[in-house]
Length: 95
Image 1 (cartoon, rainbow, N blue to C red):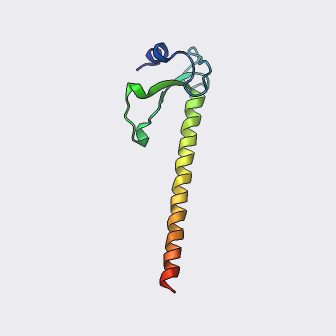
Image 2 (cartoon, rainbow, N blue to C red):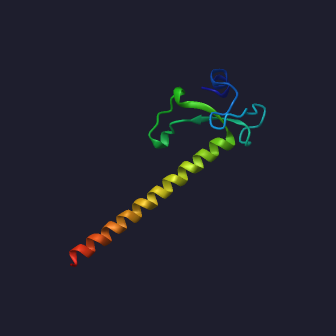
């Protein structure tokens, strides 16, 4: 689906913040309209028209940054958990 098709289906407001988008703004500018994939393929989603909405470039970018930050924090937490489990297991075998 194109930006034009999504606009006619969902209207001129950003899916995330609800504020109007500037359809005259050049691509990549904060207030310009971008196609947002609600279920990103990198997280197991399918690139399907029903999973697309319009969002400001700034909102789309921020959402992606927050998701990547959360993924990094989760991976760090898992690594710390694994280190803790190994330490605990080593203490149990040395007793």
